[in-house]
Length: 251
Image (tube, rainbow, N blue to C red; front, side, top):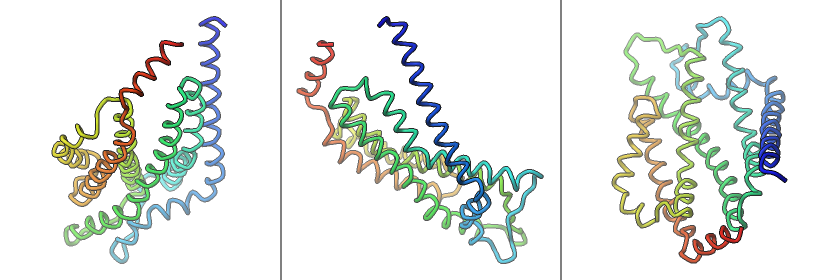
């Protein structure tokens, strides 16, 4: 088989994998679309519960009552279909991996999915109630809190992504240790800089309030410590590097 035909076959397989991932998202979306309004009501519950009595959410755009639940359901469909998407990614890259690499990548794909879900759950059940109570408590007297549904959706999606990605820190550390980019000892030495960095990241990824920033920064720091501990078990030894080099030379 020539290089050109091999390249074309890889492109065809990549297209097939992408189509399967998109179909999985579409199937989930079709199943959830009927419940779009209920899903939005559930996501908005932390804000509604923190609102003063008599206050409610509003829609300033004509199409917002339809578009906001539609957008939320579409994003949620992608979140639910992430295992299928990652499986397609795994199926595409697996043939090019060594046996020892396959043993690492598969658990990392599963753990990264679970950590992303954990980050979203932490944002919804812990951060949202505290943040919305804080926002409502500092509202000037005489100001009626009536949040637009589209603005609220953009706000919560931003936090979902921020916390979901932040919870991937252990996976990133394990990969860096396994590839030899760094070591757990080097990471421990940089702990003071990491602590400052997570608070800076929390400030950039969350709304301008101390509660949201702290609730993102502290878990990131704890996940960093967990990643350093687990990464020690995946640090590559000189014998592993020599074995990989030998495999590459034998190709």
